[in-house]
Image 1 (cartoon, rainbow, N blue to C red):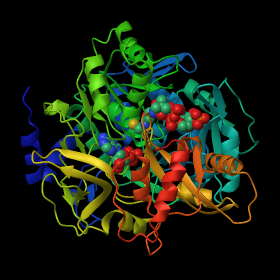
Image 2: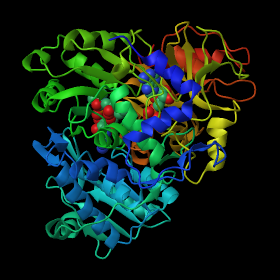
Image 3: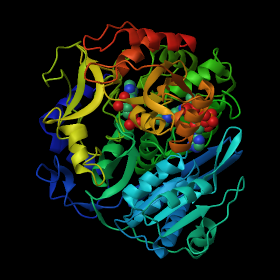
Length: 634
Ligand code: COA
Ligand code: AMP
């Protein structure tokens, strides 16, 4: 099939409102919009203003009450616990209503915030949908974050209720969530009124009388009596959720997602980008704590009437590197979306793809990769061993869906390895120099998107409009700054090369080195520090800290390192994957005192580097190189 992409992109560009109005026909609305796009509303305009809708209705009720009553909506497959469970659309409707009823009994109403701190179990998705049903705003927090990170999010969004589980399960260990939640509530100055806790048999927990409620005890009576909770009518522009993501400081940014625009963009993407039909089985192997999990484990497949896989496991070790192929063949998955790091892990464990040969993958059509740069080696390996096309696509928590990708449903474009392909309708992507002038094709620069952003993209940051301006809109007026550096070639293909800020990408997880530096600097023996992301074969990048120890400290170097590593794990969480802190006598700086992190990173990665003209003392870079050598890094 030849691609209609160019034509469709052109039609969007010439009449953007017509394009999105047509896409909006894929959604059931309570009342229609006054304008498809109102440029005068809020920061840069709003989509479908005046319309009312409900996201849960579109994800659940219209399928449960339509032709998909007995079709599986969610297939939970948990190799880590040995459990499986299929939930049809009609069962999902019952479950969501029962939880929504229990939430309403605890005072949750339209506009209230609810934090969801849960592992990869169906109740996490049910909780998200129950919030959407009530018009409440959820904020899902990834299980690998520590209590302090959870507390920061509680204080920022001030939830009325927290929904959690007694534990999460990682290979070889059970993580008790309740002590983390208790500590977070203790640390936070804003206290939720109540919690609802799902007890898991692997590790049950004590509940505090009057504050904590057992999930089954409060939900089951409603399940049994079939309590009906209506889908609350919300404005298209009302927030559906807040998802915190790493910024340049320890204070995460609360990305706000609306209801209407989000549904329109996600529904459109399922066919146009992923080439999925309603009724087919689609699998995003991510976590509901990340944006990929929000958009492509929960909302998009359900909006589309597909079946989604909720997988509680890892690409390797649960029990082996064949687990992905088992899931695909057992549940007839047609399309998998995951991070390249998962494939690097599988490739390392099973380089010849022996496990792949054991399963019937005849229904499997396409592999999509995102979350970090897809290295050509990984793509080649996956293409060769799986015998299906592999497509990279680039997006951010801020957008909620693809900025640049290969729209398979419109007819796939030729792949250029290392490129996520081209701008999706809705995005006018440009590459500009530091003064904001567009650069020539093939030249590296700042990747920006001309305003307005398309439906689903963040209208602002939660309670932080000034930060929204500063972080995204100020540097290049009229454009959204992606903070990625890249190239557009003469064919319009985009190549994403690196972040322009201090965000690093570890195993597809977005982390702030600034946030880690804040924690390390709080250690009483540390005078100063810098954290950089060093290239890693498996995880893409890994954080490495360099620290100057206060004079007069007599502790052993390795003891301080252990303490610092433990401190980052305690304050940020295991997900930071922070394992190396190297003591150095000095840090390289410019004459104005800025630490030369980019140069340090180039040295660590064995890349070519130039002595910065503004460096204060060039000898320090030799010291740093020696310190890296002593740890086998270069
Ligand atoms: N709850 C608690 N701890 C968690 C966690 C969770 N939900 N997720 C990860 N962790 C812990 C891990 O157990 C690990 O702890 P450790 O230091 O004790 O070993 C630590 O956080 C780092 O995790 P991670 O970086 O994920 O490494 P890993 O060694 O556990 O697994 C991969 C490596 C590549 C297999 C794994 O990262 C992976 O599957 N990545 C896919 C990434 C992804 O889906 N990204 C979403 C964007 S699409
Ligand atoms: P997150 O908000 O966690 O999705 O992380 C977004 C960041 O991850 C982007 O700004 C990029 O730096 C990086 N990223 C995501 N997808 C890709 C991709 N396909 N290619 C290169 N970088 C990517």
